[in-house]
Structure formats: C-alpha cells, structure tokens
Image 1 (tube, rainbow, N blue to C red):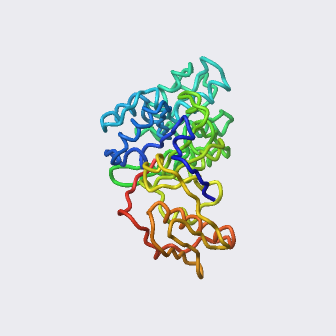
Image 2 (spheres, rainbow, N blue to C red):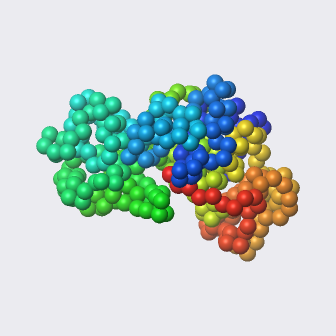
Image 3 (spheres, rainbow, N blue to C red):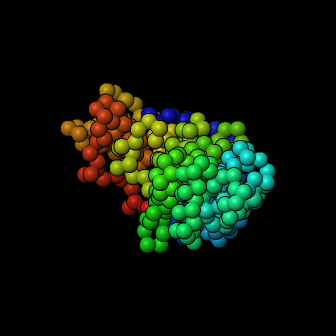
Length: 339
C-alpha cells in the first residue's frame, strides 16, 4: 500500500531519478513546469538523473533534446539502457572484448565507452548486444538469432514491447528480443528497467545514497524501483491511469502517487484503511459489487490515493481487479506519454 511522508518527499532523498517520456516530456513538448522543478531540485544540492530505456540515442543526444525543451541537463545526467548493457558485458568479459552489435549509435557509443569493441562481423565475437535501432536489417537479426541459438551469450538493452512514435505506439525493442530468444530457446540478460542493471548504473554514475525513482509506467519505472529496493513516485502525466492502477500487483505499486511532479515538493499522507474502505482528505473509496466507488470532496492527489488503495484492497482480497470503467477521476483531461 501507499506510504506516508509528513514532509515534502524530495527532502528525504539526495538523488531524484526521472524517467523521460511521460514524466519530463510528452513527445516533443516538455511537460508544463518541469524545467523549474528540475532547477529547484538542483538548487537544493540534490543529484538529478534522467533514466531511459531508449538505447538508440547517446547521452549527448538526450541532453541536447532536454536543453532544447528548456530543461537543464548535462550528458553526465543521462543514463541509458545501452550504458547498463555495456557495463554488464564489460564486467563479465573484460576490456577489449568483441561484441556483435545489433542496434544504433547509442549502443555503439556505450560499448566503446565501456572499453568494448563493437563489431558487425561475428568472427571473434564473444557476446551479442542489442538495442533499438530503426535501421537494423532482418538478415542481421536472422544471423544473431542463429548465433544465440548456438550458444553466444545475449545481452539486451531493454525488453519494452512498445515504443512511442509520431503515429502512435509501435513495436518496441522487446519484440526483437522476443523474436531472437523465442527462436533460440534461451533467455536474454536484460539491462533496462525494470531489471536492476540500469537502476544500479544510474546510482553509480550520478551519485547519491537515498535515491527515489519518478516514473509514469508501472511495469518499468515502478517495478524497477522495487528491484533495487528504493521508493518511487508515480506521476499521472504519462501512460498509467486508473485502469492500470486497478490491476497492479504488489511489485507494480508505487510508494507515492501524484498527478504531476508538484508531488515531489509536498507531503504525502496515506489513506486510512477500515476493512475494504480507504479514506483520506475528504474522500472515501471502496469496491461495491466489483465496481470502484469514490465519494466525497478534496484534492485531486488524495482522490488518486484513495482510489488506488481501494482497488488494491479489493485485488488482494478477491484476486480480481475492480471495474473502473465508469469511474471518472477529478482534474484535467488525461495526457498520454510513453517510455
């Protein structure tokens, strides 16, 4: 269940790790007020990191995009799944190891940074690394799949099944990983969220002893925070909405919920639970005949805390998610993003 913090939650942490799309920006536009909030965190002496499963772009390219949106960012603030994959390979195989690469510039740069040698010819390669790359050719995928089947170790930057595009969600790198591993009959070592390597790489590179993860996706950002045992803040400016919260098992539940990043600078009360009912700040929520009901009046943030808690109480009790199709949350129209 949600936890309580009686002071602004940012005060309890010295590293704030931000997911990107859906948290810092949506598509090509920064989310309103994010630049000022990031600057406020920096001004307090805390570390800021931008954490992305996207392996196609280099940290320089990501920071350039952020700066173009008005968000202060240095390349050293950006940590990618490609860098985490390169660390996994370098730790296992040592400097100079030849890595058969299936991906784009972001993956190549990360392998070189880690002292590895990215190659396109499998002769002498001791492992395969893959990451999203729009120009990856099918013949190269076939060759890699055959080599992995024959025993070549395989490290994937991430396993995201979707990727946001200008024309909507499209198949992500996880589809490629699934194709290779399904053919080869093996499991890939995955570096990106929700697995540990990317989260651990972020703390190692950026610093901080008391990190918090801020994200919009339960199955990457929030589950990734659980993987390394750190608190998380779910913001509702991205892909997660009431339907996703209602089905969230324990490893997908955030420590805190806020409609947006303003929640970093506010205390977070937790709902009081009485049986199947959750109450907080003038709101009261429960599940009746399988349907979520929230009554009362209060802040938007407290409504979400009550709604989520009531849904989770029901899910844990009966094993089925509450019906939320007719439940209308307060506040602005939903904004969508993805990472």
